[in-house]
Image 1 (spheres, one colour):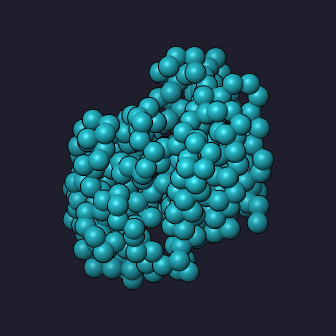
Image 2 (image 1 turned 90 degrees about the horizontal axis):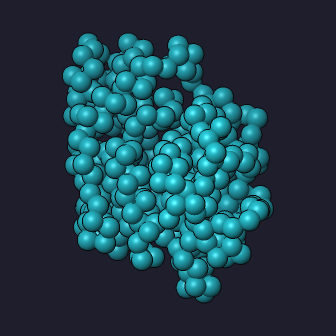
Image 3 (image 1 turned 45 degrees about the vertical axis):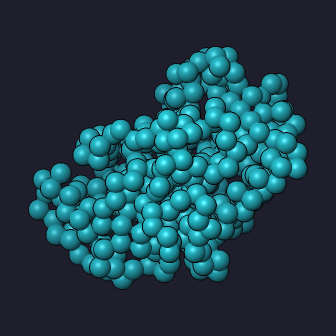
Length: 330
């Protein structure tokens, strides 16, 4: 696999940047692409001068052209947190539809294998627990979260259409809650929200009664699962996540204990369509990919907290992503 060429969209984002690291470490030539709406150049600054890395600033909802041979595409360009896709709903829909269409067309033209990043949000507020890949989901198409959920559901549909109609080599990963260094502290997801509040000396905010559940997968485990899936022979969606489930209330207490702070837990109203349960069934990943997560939550949280603790005061108190206003196309 060495010396193969791979395009990674969303390369300056949380997961995308870790994937760039992994593929470069495996000897690939990596082309990173991002338009910096939610990505940050600092996530890939250590790669800019690497001989096997090339970066292109581009919005994948516009036509995508890559010179020369291309062997693999990983499509990870998308807002990925409620704060992001509620502020930029049109862009969220476009990157999942037009962006995916452009990249599938590129994969077809280059005869490249493409892996698209789907999400556990395709299951919506699930009526089946834990969630298996054959569950069709319970999604509110017209709710505020629908722009993300439906963009990803469409993304899966058009990917399978290209696979069946054109014979394109495609892979689909359904990503469950993932965390680790390079997450944005202000992105609205529960781990950076709790850790940011703890670092600022604020009480930890839990929405609803806190009995809703989540399952958290450390980024190194997630990247390993994605890497294995790309080189598998399986075209249908595969869940990649950690099945170790915990309530948000218990998780808040766990964060306070881990960090050793004196904050309290406070409660606010639950957002519309916030899923009450989230736990992956990873039986398929175990069977097909010989994959399961290995990093325990305490170890992963300590690494993540160390990263957040290293951020500047400006980053710690920034309430909105700096690139939203200048890069959004309606």
